[in-house]
Image (cartoon, helix red, strand yellow):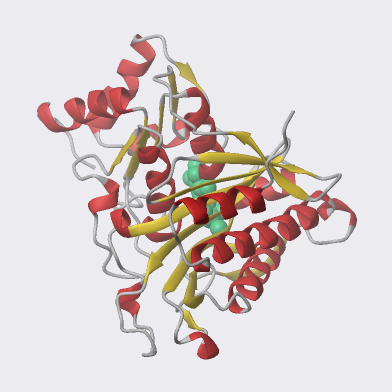
Length: 330
Ligand code: AHG
Ligand code: MN
Ligand code: MN
């Protein structure tokens, strides 16, 4: 089998699009960080890096030791990249300006480790990233508005998934969705899933324990999935649930609940990049009413309800949410 490494693939893409190499450089820097995170995760049980650190992050959630290790690894590689002028992480309250890279045109947002509750139990987790062209002028200080852009403006997005194997899946604005598997023997991501397209599928994915906290229309949609004899799967790491959805089709949802009327998942670090990938693969993502990629964030850590998957399932869901009168609200 002909091996196409990520490096080679990115170089080919760069040539085809007549690009400058800055975006290619950023993607390769993120891939390097992902390799390091993958390596740390693989030996986590042996070197006392499992468990909580005892602090809460910007969203008020318990921080795990590996969250910090992943965050530092992403920060280090992006700060040294020279291709982005500022970064924003789910783990930090504010964005971080990279002072010697004022002339770089990109900003990067990331969830360093998605799926915190699965870290200590050896279940798939991942790193999610989104890349935008800055809104402010080159050479100027970056502003929050550079990060609060609508998701359809992403120039590239993707994720690393630390699962039974480690994969990197990414897409650029003008390209297709491609998946690379880490070959540990040569420490290279190699093209394994070219031009990924989401099939229709028949899987629905939701935290059933919260069923009683969902809007009655969402409950009716879930009941309909059962009536349609769809398969149920829920990993509890959005990145892994969405990866399965990309490969197998169906729908993943994290709706609004009574305690979280805006949903739990973060628009900028989780929903936008994964919606970008799924849409590029022929699927769709909505908050129930508006396309995720059209939403305008008002703040860095904004949350949104999300329903994401094959277009046919998302359309069916929208019919439930939009046409049936509510008999009860959350
Ligand atoms: P994070 O670990 O980055 O805080 O994200 C966890 C998220 C997401 O990965 C997952 O889909 C969701 O939390 C699971 O939440 P529940 O435990 O409420 O189902
Ligand atoms: Mn997350
Ligand atoms: Mn996280």
